[in-house]
Image (cartoon, rainbow, N blue to C red; front, side, top):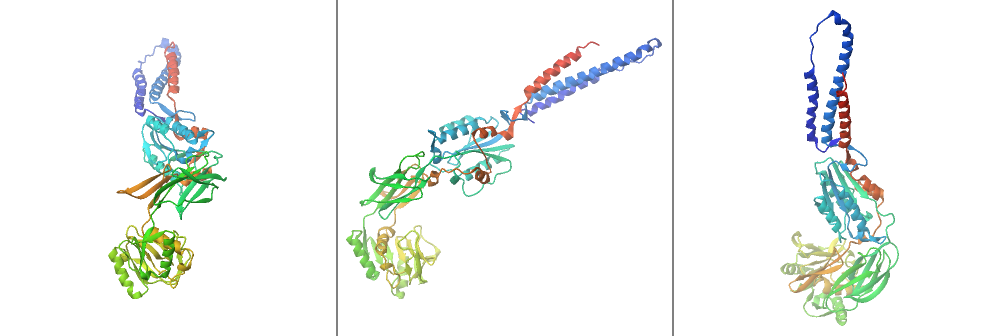
Length: 561
């Protein structure tokens, strides 16, 4: 039993008043023996015994009356199942308004149902409770009940994905830090399996987590997982539940193609030949019950053909590849990019010199240019590994130099693009691309493969001149460009996290194991709120008992002698 006003219990000291009055009223009458009255002694003793019992009963009744009134004034709370009152509680309500909560169920967005449950939890909180609200942004908002209820009502579909494991862990630490005996976390989410994260939550002792049970059968959904532009084509991957969906490709609002795609597959569409500049398009799926993932934008940069100058020591295979590229207008003559064993003033593709005696001179030229990589001793032969350059994967290298960063450091734009036996073979740094082998059949079979001309094209048009910075981020589908002065230097493509498209709910056993939560359907979730802290106010019952005691005391006090 607990009390809302425990200081009132100091009034129990008043229960001693009837006892004191009773003691003060006790009198010892003088004893006198009259022979004529001896026959009355027995009757007097019986009357005195009855009077003593009556006074004792009045003492008990009056003491009980004071105790009942004082305890009732202290507002005692007793455990109960149906009581509306509860002990002061620290509560965090997690409302998952991530993109998946926008799925339409029975004609209404799921987010409406989640908002109603979160609102009910906060409405059941009392003024003595400490309450927080956490949305998909992961920010715990502390405030009074009206402010938090307003935040729930205004919560709209977010573009951010909520990691449920991280959210529950954060909420548990928040309530655990409060100096109250009762601590609860209410998780109101669709409980996607993909949102559980990769680790189990370590709940502090005494923290109770309630999770709203997800839908038994989630709606079917297909979404666009990713869009990539490479090699003059756009590739779209589709995720979600089985079933083919119609894809539409648009370029600056103009439809350029259609295709059918099923989850787990990818569709590639050749892009029209376009002029230099930045180009923006989008891929859309036929609408379904979750609209947030049916569209995704893509962007790519078309640079003007590189103007290339090849030194005589670049070799005949490089010269032949450049002739093919000039004929197809992929390169032009000029000094934008230099190819040879000496770096030029602009972008450069640097090959190791054919004469080992000239390696030192090449390294000095690289250092003067500001390139931190240099050629060192011979390396062992092996196949090329290039995760970002499929044209090179598995091509044999029979002779090469090892490439090491000078002084153990690199510049900010350093990147290892390909390796042989785990050692750098193709690197980029400070506007220069270094190869560990000469592009000659005595060093590697690359010049006689079908990918050699596209590789040279990639080196001079993309790698040596630098790639436009493309990034992805969570958000409504759109493209934002980054500028430097008057030049556009990069772009960020926004879209929902692909994992939001998988609406498969996590089984209750997995949720309990990963989050330490009790998974309950709507009615049981409502009944379980504050169950561990729920109390009923017993002051009314005590006042009724006090009234009954007062009536009995009055009756006993007015009895005749």
